Image (tube, rainbow, N blue to C red):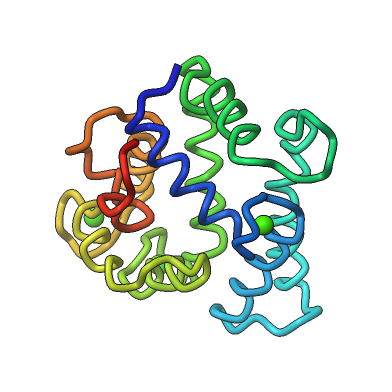
Length: 189
Ligand SMILES: [Ca+2]
Ligand SMILES: [Ca+2]
Ligand SMILES: [Ca+2]
């Protein structure tokens, strides 16, 4: 079972993944996200890095859709997605959850740690917000919440803690809730 608050955050995440905002998650959304990431990071079409980003984004969908898409219409409704997220993310066993969190963190570092210093700077964090069309006005506040030791850089550990809380925490005060910006404007019903 997931709580109303966890569902609110999953709804937020679903809306982020539904990049073309047609109410369903499909392969087109991941291709749209991939193309926008390349645009934001200044990666030219058809160079090896472009293919890497595009493949990485498609894989997020192709790895899970057989499980997510229960009625086999090549798209995921919110309730299909919620069932998947409940079983495979929020309430899976700790080992599987930690490995999910680690894979999210590694994907983020691989794409967005552009200067490869093993930290996500505020600029790199802003690239994430722009790539996923998140509300940029919340990026600095979110960055401050995730940067626990206030050294103006997000370490892998700090990002891991935030991703961990975003999907699993039922505590509205958990700072990781802010990973993708403000969830507070979303209704809790
Ligand atoms: Ca869509
Ligand atoms: Ca960096
Ligand atoms: Ca830090």
